[in-house]
Image 1 (cartoon, rainbow, N blue to C red):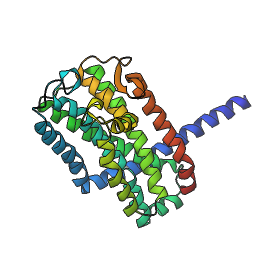
Image 2 (image 1 turned 30 degrees about the horizontal axis):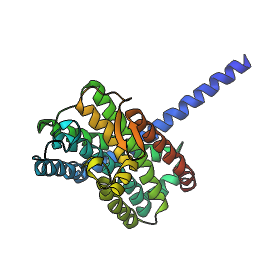
Image 3 (image 1 turned 30 degrees about the vertical axis):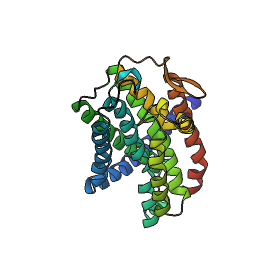
Length: 284
């Protein structure tokens, strides 16, 4: 009887802890969305920039010679997957900026001395906010691409697109949050974002296939995490997707869709494990 009562008390305590963690996370996430509604330029700019890329680059290479792209697809459809990934990547790369500004304005210190059930809610709120923002922006680009005639993935293909984007967003968000706590100020974080953004885009298969690149750039593109996100999404737009099929003929060997998702999963877990000690130090 005593052991049963003890187990019931433990279960109630665990349920109460989860409820409080959810309440704290919800409140902090709501605060971030309120900031977004007061400064919607962040959302608008996050959609407009890749949209301009999609329209201008699609028009620029609309008359590309046949045989340039695999499967004879149009350049607009080829480019669409790269722009979708670039949209999610850019949004996730900015995940650390709200945390950095909270550090500089002193709000983070107020949170650290507040009677929070778990300070993990600070990180969870940022992850939820950036994930939702990235998906909204990416879906807006996908809708625009469909209107422009670049297609829409089927049911299974859409699921692959969402899973791939989530893995990429989680990985890049973890990296950005780690930088937000490791770097001294927002100037340094913005500098890292500017330096990393476009080089990673150009050194991927977003704008051109590997066969079109010089050897050294092909090696970089075949090791770039963005490439492992772009190829499954591009395959999802081509029709029924087979994850066991080869999606990338890299210099070091063939890469299947399963390999791409596995690499993104390992990268995500690795980055979260890497920044966990840093977050534990900064949030205690």
